[in-house]
Length: 231
Image (cartoon, rainbow, N blue to C red; front, side, top):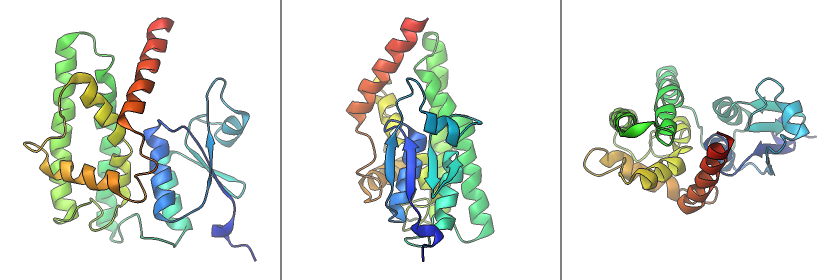
């Protein structure tokens, strides 16, 4: 008899995407075997359009014949659908709410500021955005201290929901640091996050799917060249 968790699993994504990385780490944490379907966008595949007709965006998890969209919803689904491996979301309702709050902050405020640095108009705007990103990291440093209770991860002894939410952007954070020549994560202001980034990147569920900084940097240059050409 085939159970729900035994059904075929596919993930539509692209290797540079921080949002796709979230799903890959969650699947790895739960030791779920899956087929990775690389999306090339030129044009978007029919499978992507059919699987996510509302947003037409990656990632899309296909479990059996059922598509699940949006990275953090996918992470929550993986946690609920597979009992193998550690729990991703905290067990206590308040801790779950806190993790979701900070994940929303990262997606709605922190990442958009970091993403905007590359296209900043003039030094003043760039400095303002770098400051905003730095202030956000200081807030996350404080959150790590409180939520982890002195452990390595936001999830405590093990990677959890907030680690995955923030960790998806680790590669792009390093690309941003390389591009602007500023260490946004540093021992002076964010020592906890420096340790966290090292441990997260080396974790068995992460190390084989976290894109190399150099490779991401080259990809970013191609993106910027395309953007400049289109303008």
